[in-house]
Image 1 (tube, helix red, strand yellow):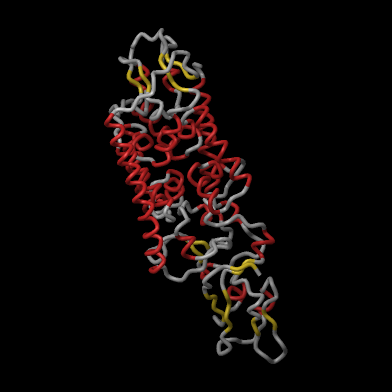
Image 2 (tube, helix red, strand yellow):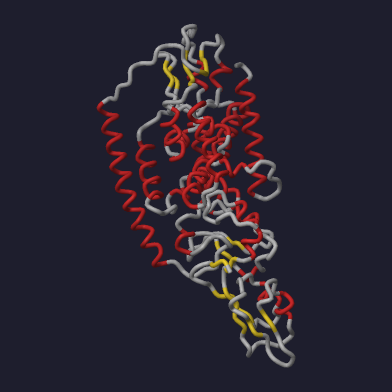
Length: 426
C-alpha cells in the first residue's frame, strides 16, 4: 500500500495529459472526455446508446466499489488541483490551511441538478468540473477566471472546491458513503496526526480515529505518509456503527430535497423563458434546434477546438452556446468530428453518412450579384445547384444541406446561408 499513492498519482497525470491533448485535438489515445460523470449522465437521456450506458455504469460502479476515485483519477479539474497542491508542498514548501467541510454543497447540488432535471444546462455549465476545465483550456473569460479562483483556493485550502462546491462531487460523495472499500483507521494507529495533516480534503480526524468517506476523494496520500501503516484502504473488518440520523442531518436533507423539487420547476420555467430570447443561429449537425441545443450544451468547447475548418465558434452575448460562423469557412462534407467529440450528447453522435444527409441550414442565390461563373455548381457536394448555359445557377432546395460550400466558393457574395428552425435528415 506504500506505493499505491504514487501509482494512482502517475495514472492521474497520464489521464490529465490525455484530457488536455484531447481538448486540442492533438492526441486522443483514450477518449477521456467520454468518461466524465456529468456528460455521460446527460447523454443517457438525450443521446442514448449501449456504449454510453456501459461507460456510465463503469464510472458509477467504480464509485460504489472504490469510493470517490473518480475525483482523483478521471476528473481533469480535480487532478489540476492536486498538481497545484504538489507544487505548493514541494516547491513553495508551505502547508495549506486545514479546510473544514460544511453543508452548503448539498444546497448547491440541489440547485444545479434540479435545474438540469427541469431541462436546462444553463447552471451546470458554469459549475460542472469538466465544462469548467474545457472552457478554461479553450481560453474563455469565464473558464480562465474560474480556474484562477479554483487554483488560488487549492493553494490556500487544497481540494475545497471538490469537497464543498462541486455538484458532481456531492453526488459521488453520497454514493461513497455506501461504497464497499473505504479509508479507515486500524487499531495499530498511534494518533501521530500525519494522515490528518496531509489530507487534502480534510476528512480525517486522527484524535477520534474517524474518516469521512463521503468527503474523501481517495487520493490515497494518507496511506503513504502513515509511519506505522495504521491507516487502511479496503473493507473495514470492524463492525459498522448502526445507522442513525441526527436532527441536523434530517433538516439539511429535507431542505435540500425541497430545494431540489422547486429547482426542477424553475428549470422548466428557465428553459421556456430562454427560448423566447434566442437569436437565430446555424448549429453543428446533430444539434437539432437552437432551443434544445442551448439547454443541453455544456460549453466545454471540445467541438470548437476540434473542428478542422474552425467554423464552430464559442458562445457569445447573443447566443450563449457554441454555433457555426460561415464567414470563417464551410462545413466539410466529409467531416463529422464535432458529433464524435461532444461528451454531453448536445450534438448527437452521427455517422459520416448520417451527417452528410443532415440539413443544418439553407442556401439562397442572389441572381443580381451572380456572375454565372459556375463555381458554386462545382463546389456543391450534394449536387443541389444546377446551371444551364447562359442562365444563372438554380438551387434545388430539396437537396441542399446548408454546408456553406457554395458560399465559400462564390467570390461575388451572391450566396447567403440562412438558418432553419429544425435540422432534418434528407
